[in-house]
Image (cartoon, rainbow, N blue to C red; front, top):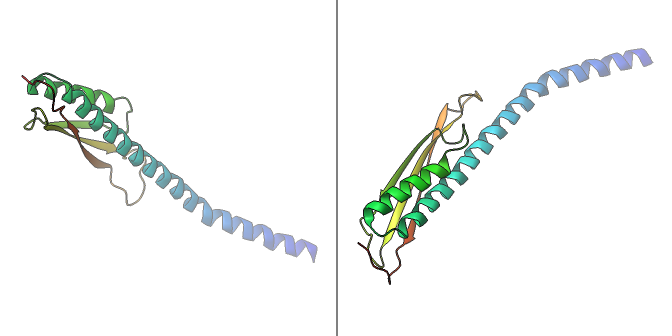
Length: 140
């Protein structure tokens, strides 16, 4: 009687292992996808903020636009999968004392190496940040 009971327990364990292994594998891949997208969102937010802060301390609208683009792209590059294609758009139309600068950072996140069913090969994340220009400064 003891031998029969062990045999059915081993068979049940094998069935559970066969059923749970793919589920746990897909769950682990989904965790990687969500982690990568979350990291990209944080990176895009930080890059847009850095670009806006770099722009508002510049003396002219042209130099503000250049500083924002340079600062935001430097912050976005560095991780191969997080931000594959970075696009920085700087709005300096309100660059005057008391105005503001708006920096929009758009980034494509590469997910093709994970190959999770139902998840696209890449996703795009965009974030805008506005920084005020000091009302008591001179602008060229």
